[in-house]
Image (cartoon, rainbow, N blue to C red; front, side):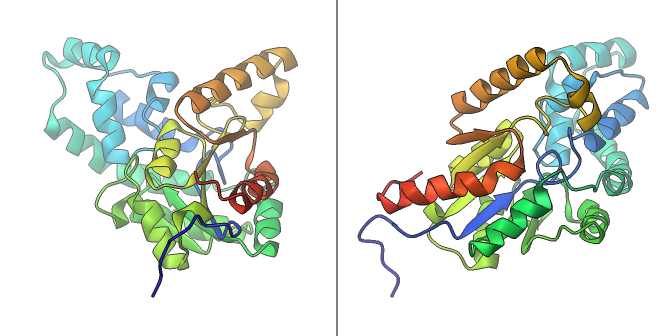
Length: 275
């Protein structure tokens, strides 16, 4: 019989990686283009910054949040003479799903250092799971494309596989079952959005925010490299503060730093500390 009469003092057993902006698609570029397009097809222009606000949510929830944003709803009302409604959300989602499925495969390149980080984690005996705001049909395009480039997690759970996506913890719980890992203090959630952080915290896991390659900065690798170093430093510090304010236990520039953080977490666990 499995009991927990004292704090877990073992090592990290699994990490749960987000996909776009964390593992693949530097800057989380692919989804943004789709959201902009489906709104534009209805005569409503949304900015990249607006499209990024709900990132990490299940894609239908993402569209719903965009429709509820004051700036977007005002523009919608000027064009359509009314506020966006449930039917609009459903129609845009139906359009977005196939667009997203074709788009994500184009942005399947692993983020620099990902493959090395995954190999290092596995050498430590750490299993690699994943969660995403993409649905299963979208992931059917991304999974083989990423696998051809060397990335295939041990468990892949999509927002459509569970009762609700982020910030609910169900994808993390499903990963735990798939990987047969317990307790949740032995698991680490890694992602580049606030909803990733909420997901990990709600699941009772150690939670790591990713700044430089993700949605918050929203730039390609080339654009990041071209930034003034001081401006980049300030921007990353702002993102780090935002993640820590939302409760992230650790913040890193890129997933390539995750094996070192896992070792730090092992030290915390050995002292009987919990997330």
